[in-house]
Length: 86
Image: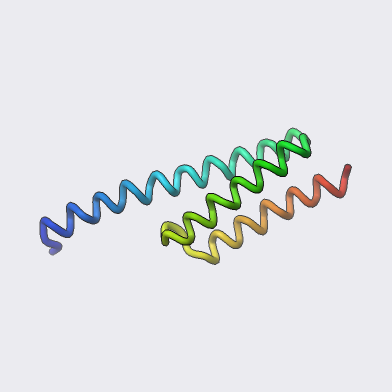
């Protein structure tokens, strides 16, 4: 059973990680929606921003680096599909 001090610190870390995870998910969904609207300049900037936040989350250990890499790959695949259509 964890001590009270470790419980408090784990709750602080959990809150911090949750905000980082939520922000990265928001940026990814915004990028996907921008790609869906087929607005190339907004899509490119949204994908760039989402990738930046995924890298930050992976660097902080909130998500695994392979998870971040997989999500970035999927975003780029969608973006490249949009660019090849244009």
